[in-house]
Amino acid sequence: MKNFSFYNPTKILFGEGRIKDIAGEIPRESKILVTYGGGSVKRNGIFDEVIAALPGYNIREFGGIEPNPSFETLMQCVEVVRKNNIDFLVAVGGGSVIDGTKFIAAAALYEGEPWDIVKTYGKVIKRALPFGTVLTLPATGSEMNNGAVITHRASRTKLPFMHPLLYPEFSILDPTKTYTLPPEQIGNGVVDTFVHIVEQYLTYPANGKVQDRFAEGLLLTLIEEGPKAIGQPTDYDVRANLMWCATLGLNGLIGVGVPQDWATHMVGHELTALKGLDHAKTLAVVLPAMLDSRREDKKEKLLQYARRVWGIQTGDDDERIDAAIRKTREFFEIMQVPTRLCDYNISADIIPAIIEQLKTHHMNRLGEKMDVTPELVESILEKCL
Ligand code: NZQ
Ligand code: ZN
Image (cartoon, rainbow, N blue to C red; front, side):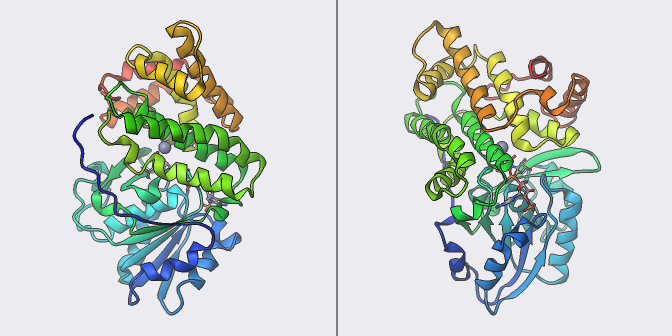
């Protein structure tokens, strides 16, 4: 296991009815801005519940943060924050609203060109407003990590950034708030969580036995509970387990002391930037081909994954790896997330543009061994058609 420091200050308030505890987490004199997305939280009552839980507070709101939040929209919010001297943000929504709020928290106090925050992957951040979240879509782990992914629409650039000041102060995880999610978003959330875990687990052995067993436990839980979440949308225990899986999948815990990959995510971001495909859908398309093409480098962990996660015991090494990749693809399809580019009416024409984007964004050496080159990505994408 490699040396590591682990720090995660986010306080989790988990369970039904926890929105009412929000006031205890925000200083009384705060000037609050509640941020949200396209309006689902207004329609399903979550927004009103948040406001009702903050009696006597000075509150403003900013809605319209879109999926794959854009720099352009977020800068409008930064103006509102500055003009009204807002000093605490509350994000109510999924990963996009939370990520967007992280950008707002940093940009509101940044004196230079705000896009530099993203362009430098967060390195220029010196200060950020405090913020909390009310999660409505289990998927990204953003509710308990310090990362965000923002899109510059004008230049079709989607990049991640992170900073220790961007952990939420608190996150409310009430599984009943996910009951209104359409099946498509449940599928997206399960696939995104699955791939987060895989990107930290399916690399090469590092003797991180605890991390491996945690990762395998989370994957097994997703495989068991994911399909139930589509069939039984108001089953509390199913939603509770998925929500906690998503948070633990990307709050740092399983990734400490072990190599991490993230090539699938970086290629996926380019697909979203160019084609507007949902984040999880890009992962469902890219991951099976990524694993197939890198099977030699990942051989030991792929065999461990086949055995411990999918119970595959028979066949030679290649047959077991084939079976594990097939099972992975089948699972995504069971979650109603198609796994081929053609399922989304995307043809081979897109491949050169993705390769160009990767080069422009300096993504020339991806993966745990930094050996995933644009040329390799090209051959991987040809398998995704
Ligand atoms: O915008 P509203 O109207 O709220 O509707 C949303 C949106 O249309 C809807 N929704 C959310 N909660 C709902 C609901 N509808 C009904 N009932 C509810 N309870 O779901 C749609 C998708 O929401 P979004 O927030 O975009 O989804 P998700 O949570 O999957 O977030 C995706 C974004 O997170 C980034 C992705 O790149 C993408 O931009 N990621 C962030 C990460 C991080 N910060 O660590 C890591 C991830 O790998 C990921 O890259
Ligand atoms: Zn993701």
